[in-house]
Image (tube, rainbow, N blue to C red; front, side, top):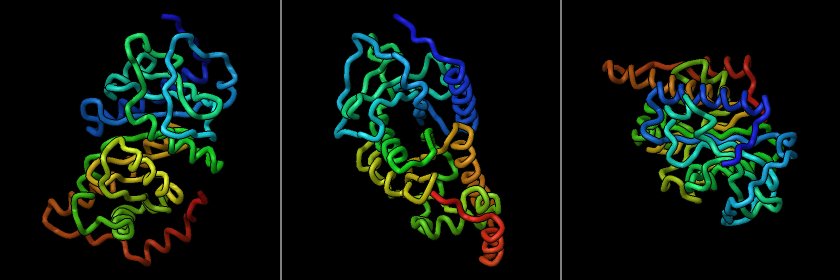
Amino acid sequence: MRTLEFDDATLDLLDRIAAVAGTLWERGWAERNAGNISLRLLASFSSRKSDRAGSPLHPLEKPLPNIGGCHFLVSGAGTRMRELGKKALKRVCLVRISDHGSSYRVVRGRFEDGYQPTSEFPSHLLVHNYLKGTGRDEIIILHTHPTELIALTHIPEYNSEEKLNQLLWSMHPEVKVVIPEGAGLVPYVLPGSTELARATVASLEERRIVLWSKHGCLAVAPDPETALDLIDTLNKSARIFLACRAAGFEPEGLSREQLAELERKFPRLEL
């Protein structure tokens, strides 16, 4: 198999993706082959010649012109995060979107053996197309299964964005500081479906992290570490709440006045 050499900047990104993947596994948020990662490479990389003869084109459901000609690093189908954490170079695909955004081609990966990006890659591309088209700086999408956040979405009382965010902000001031815009919440939809991807894009218009009820969450960020930070911070708040409940009492939480004070000191981000 012919090998495409990565430059130092891309190799550094792979190392950082591997570190995040290893953390997801250690947290217990990536059972079996759960979770996936994709990252849009910058234009300086996309200008390099990287097409592979023989790699088949995969048509997309509809053209995504905002990401036409872009390259992506994406975790491979069936990849376990514990494997990605150790051997990122062997567990990711390099994918190029056609110039018109109507198809993609695997340009690095074991395509002779049917090695392909995660099955949720088309959904990732819908999100990437939205982010690039609106001029936002997030280039990475991280999807994983944070235990306590998923547990929280099973409690009917918190199946609304308003009540969910009020709870998460009130459990830990760091959540109000790091995620002042709050999290989105998408009711349960079939995993991997176009419907889920479209609902996620709509929710991301004012958010950087979206909870998928009874399933997991997705975060977008300019780098792998920040995507992990968003999920980690939010899950810490859910863990505090559930620990209080498990101890047999209802947590008091921060008051509305205390939350307002935090919001004045740490203004909301402009998305």
